[in-house]
Structures are given as structure tokens and as C-alpha cells.
Amino acid sequence: MQLKNKVIIITGGGTGIGKAVALKLAAEQAKVVINYSRSEQAAADVVKQITQSGGTAIACKADVSLAQETDTLVRKTVATFGTVDALINNASITAQIPMSDLDAVTDEIWDSLFNVNVKGMFNCIKAVVPHMKKQRSGVIINMGSVAGTTGIGSSIPYAATKSAIHTMTRSLAVALAPNIRVNSIAPGAVDTRWWAGNEAKMHQLAGHLPLQRISTSEDIADAILFQLTQESVTGQILTIDNGQTL
Image 1 (cartoon, rainbow, N blue to C red):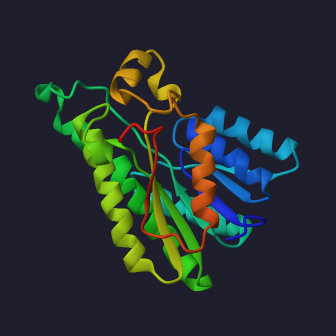
Image 2 (spheres, rainbow, N blue to C red):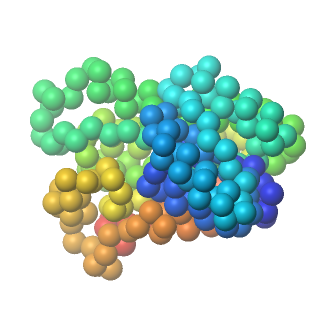
């Protein structure tokens, strides 16, 4: 897929990896929709940065865990730009809980993480697919994690949601072929605000890294652009982890 003039929704697009993706897509002359739930000012700042550089972007609030709000997000996108060509399912939440502390893993934590990380992604996918089917083309990228492969992460529920995302990606790649491609990115440790104040735990979870570096948001954004543009890639979980899982 060529990125120029393509309409691309990025959930959680105001900060971290989402922001990095938005800026890179805008530089390629894509039309970017920055979704946010709580980070309104951050999303507005990204839109301002893009538009001042001559790009095209809007911000749109939606809680992805609520299907009616994701439907509204997609309707606003189509009303503004006429269609939707790609969806970057980046919005996720976590809970910092020691893996051995089972008592701290409450029903509320299970529900909140699955509602956003898994059901939220599916809500967004369900909303964009009719438009992609109508135009017989589209790309969906879901943000996974090496935690979904190794089972080790910020908490057991978080790792379980990411494993579910990997499986859902493969299922959807089959279900939506041949016109819609679906892939996932599985980052290892990434230096984002999630780890602010918990850098020691980030390095502990990462373990020995053969490349001796922690990924940046821009590293992950580059991988997302690869999956957007490579027409032969679908159903793949692309691991970007500096050798963490070797």
C-alpha cells in the first residue's frame, strides 16, 4: 500500500508509539486520525505538529472498549475523509503486578485489560471492515507484545491479552483475506511513558539483550510502516525486541 493520501486511524495516537507512527505517516503524506481516550491535549499537540508541517490530521475521542464509541470514531473519519484505508490498533493498558502475586489480580483488572486490549481492538476492526470491504482493500495492524509469546510481562493479565491479540490477528488474516491484510507487532522493551519510574523493572524483564539497547517508539513505528506497505505480508507477528526472546 502506498501511504500518500491514505486515511489511517491510530488508536492511542497522542503519545508514545502512537505519536511516533502518526508523525511518520504524516511525513509520508497520509491523512491521519489521532484517536485518544484521556490524552486530549497530547492528541491536539500531535495534530498541531502535523498540520504546522503541512500534513493532514484530526483528533477524535473514543473509548475503544465501547463499541458505540468506536463506531462513532469510524463514522467521523469517513465523514471527514471519505473512507478508511488502514487501522493501527495501538491503544492498550496494563497493570504493574508481580507475576507471582496472584491475589493482586482482581476481576476488575482482568476485565479492564481485556475490554481495552482485546475487545477494544476487535471493536475498532469490526467498525472499519465494512468500509475496507467496500473498496476491496485495507490494512489492520494490532499492537501485541513479546509478553504474548513468553508469558512474562508487567502482569499475567497483560501477557494473556497480548497472546489473545496474536491469535486474533492470525484468525482475522484468514477471515478477511484476500483484500484486507492483518498483522501484529510484538515489541520487547520500549522506552515509553509506561515505564516512567519503573525503568529498573523494564530492564529486569528485558533480561540480557544481545543488541544491548532498548527500542524507541520510532523503532516500532518503522516496523508498522513496513507492515503497512508490504503487500505480501499478512497474519504475521513481527517481533522487534533487540534479541530479547533469543
